Length: 501
Ligand code: NAP
Image (cartoon, rainbow, N blue to C red; front, side):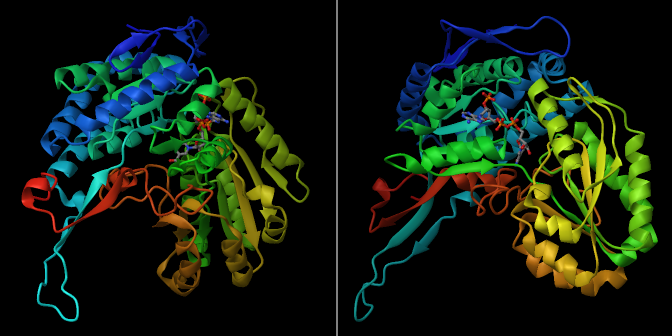
């Protein structure tokens, strides 16, 4: 059952104005609209909660994370029903995403119990060292304080209310204030109920988690500027992320902003792979490109090949495979509108050829395929921008040197992919030093959609893929965003944090 309210420090709080979700089918639901005063109340409660939660034992936080997972699972059917209604995503996808979400929470519970993330170090005192003695030095990672979280429309669970950012921050010992996404307030409402139940069952300070529903952009801007907020985890568009990043940097006390933004995830199909398996790669590309109506930040929007008959055959195979994919419902009307106008812009660009042009209107997306030359791609930076949806651009380079030039020209990416056979090794070796500087994750002979949640995953990359290229928003390493190292010099055991004593 929906509350239709904000959750602020354990209380369900209404508002004077409301907004509605935009269901694919069925009657809309009403939700209290967020206001800056809700932000202030949540941030104060989070700061107060930090003085206990930030000093809890790891086992306490691990139990809390596992309890949240259990409470989400208990509401599984309700979450999926609301998710399909609000986002149009299929039931199987939402069930899978819930599995990933509770899996992340449990993974972080195991991770903090193991304790390696604390990165504990000790330089023993050297009292007799000449010319100067060395003091006893110990170091450990500590939580930074209250964290603000903004989820994305395309992952109503795994990158939203109890998604990766929230799991990482709570695991670190940081209270969380979520700004609910206006595309799926119902899902956010039910997930917040699960977290609320877990906070109460674990007898934690209620300020450890709050959620303010959206419907009002002033909520987001007030949240990132609130003096008690010490970092922001953001998943969303480049435009939104950049606006929030600039606000964080302009604060009297600037704070870190971890924005995970969009990407075109270029795919380099090398000569031998194109000749031997071009059709297979093209078909796989079409599947990855159109999966979930192309609404993935890891969607491989650009494929680069050398000119010749193998590139022509690749294009024909990709066209055939994409033509078979029908219309899919997009997450919101706004996202569908942006997709349609992005496809129109691409079609109108000088030097771009339409390979597959389909008719789609309303909230529906059908795939589009375009082609251009590397020379034109290099001359027109707009062609390298993300169009969020099932749209592919094939870029044809004259020769290997021009291919390197394209690689050098691309901005930061979440992923870059090389399709290669053994005989392509020298070409791949020449690309590698360039691609390594461009992306957080490099793939060979695969497709980037589908991000493993694990110890080695890096989901991030140089700007504009993310605003902080030293970090990842997926996997256990993501906890580092919400920690900072503290050095303790000559501390008696009784004064050290429990984890260091
Ligand atoms: P979005 O429109 O940027 O929204 C994300 C959140 O930011 C929402 O809560 C939104 O509020 C808020 N927001 C955006 N602009 C704002 C502004 N100017 N002032 C205040 N708040 C603002 O992004 P989206 O449509 O949810 O997600 C799609 C994008 O996310 C795509 O570009 C996709 O590639 C990217 N994405 C990236 C990753 C990754 O891990 N790198 C993962 C998933 C998605 P409202 O609720 O008011 O809209």
